[in-house]
Image (cartoon, rainbow, N blue to C red; front, side, top):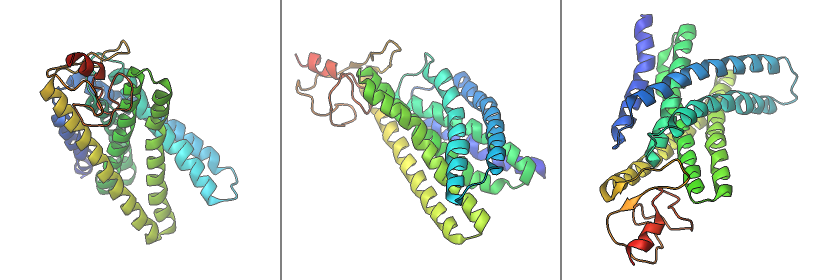
Length: 289
């Protein structure tokens, strides 16, 4: 019976990982994705221990407001530490590696980091509570969404860095950590407030929040996958090199005045590369001469 419950808690992770991998046209090496997944499990265990001891510590403190306590617990301890645990392996193994070649790859790395964390969290939860259904239906999609958000803003930071816009790069880099941290904190706060107070108002708020988050992240994945499709169809090489500049070649001549990116259609806001998909805008000017 335990084996069945453990299987039910993990199978959604495998399904989501397979779907995300299938969407990737220029397939990432499975070895890299496995390394990110396993590393996030190891780092997640360390982060879980840190979170546990910090929560035990603040439980001994006296707070004048339950709201302040929840902010400290769910934002600054649980959510922040868990998201950092996903950020580290995805960045060091995926983003710093030689196989990162597209905007979508960034999402893939961070989603696999989130799934690795969800995997060890689910195993520990089933060992303790023996209830895999809520984990499969709620927590795994949640960690997937946090990974999508983290990867999306990290990719935006990468493009800003390629455009030599360090201010925008730093801004998006901070967003890549704090946006998923905020969503994660709200996610936990709503569901645990319902559990503590047994007030279905909070459960209703949670499901509204969760549905909106899933839809928003689905739109991000859909958007980025279309950009990837365009890159594959129209560009011979879409590799983002590690020397701070992108090496992208466009097959067709385009107008000299570039108001919109010819690949993804996003408005051009200055810089050498499209802020949305990383296309080399300088080439469009050279190609029309």
